[in-house]
Image 1 (tube, rainbow, N blue to C red):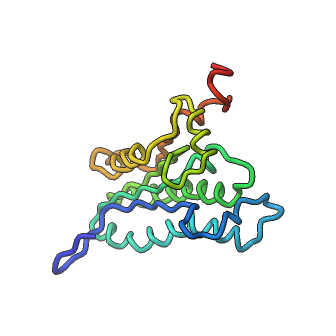
Image 2 (cartoon, rainbow, N blue to C red):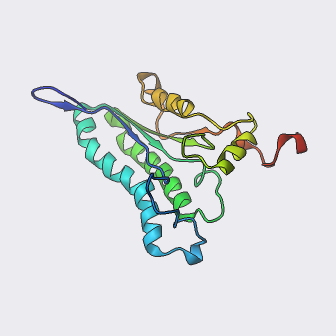
Length: 189
């Protein structure tokens, strides 16, 4: 947020919330729906969707006043495109991010504000477990993605060059969601 004596300007918002938290006591939201306690469902929705609602609502007055803004929501391929067993709350929240993106895009398009989303797939970070790295190696490009590749798409959507793009979802998954076969490439391709 830039500020001057009379006004405060906030013209870019990136809603980026994730499920893995340092010091978090395990992944209790990774259970079959029949066994998932309601408080764990609520937590998954709160951390992955409600935070975007709250932050967007707090920032919108600045953007509306300026008649300009860029909102980029970080969703995931998990939810709106594909899913995994026992990921019901996460999948629902990340699919909800796409719905939030599209609804806000329509509400704000004539007010100079664009709203888009990115959907990362297997992205290698310091908190990536081994199974995610292995899954990334089985994408068509043969490796997990890098955070800077996701950041580049976000930076583009936040730029003036993306002024005619709104309500869209950019998938950043090395082509993984395109392929039906998900095993090692030497066994199929």
